[in-house]
Length: 133
Image (cartoon, rainbow, N blue to C red; front, side, top):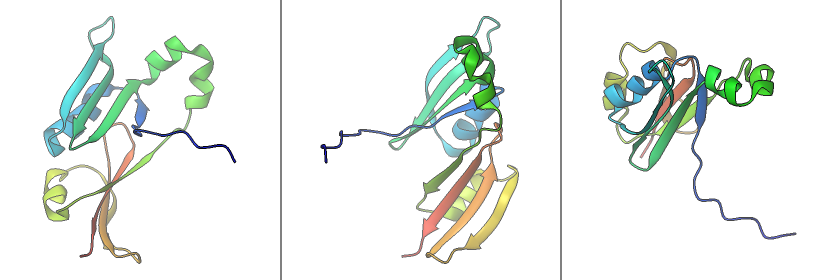
């Protein structure tokens, strides 16, 4: 079996209709810092990334992906992602995301965590989990 390559980091790039509301979800509610912003011809963002505590999320508009790779339009239909983030204090996170659409209310899992799932403005689901101690 060949040696597997060393992987350094996994960062989701979520394809959405509009970057700005998605970026605000992370910066305004959860304290992420914007690292990169790429505006389009109309001044609206076509790409952005935000980071906090070694985590990073990236967003790119569907229109800009299709403009770069016209054949990707069909592949982008129906794409979605669920992000799972382990947190130290679920109460604090729940307060921070208050008002976001709840996908699954706070609950206990069979594997020992307490979790809540919300939908961010791009339509993707973000789960937050506090593991039992």
